[in-house]
Length: 68
Image (cartoon, rainbow, N blue to C red):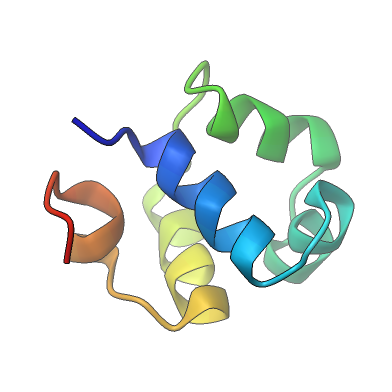
């Protein structure tokens, strides 16, 4: 099972963004990105949409436990 935080972290690293850079792109703080990546906090729907837009993936991809 792939957790949301792991997907966000993998996408961020593949895109070569730091946590700070991603945070600035979606309008949150670096500690918030860290919390998303370690699954201690869940993004709001609005933030989830912004994350999907930054990485050009669907919200379904982020939320669903499927490899594709």
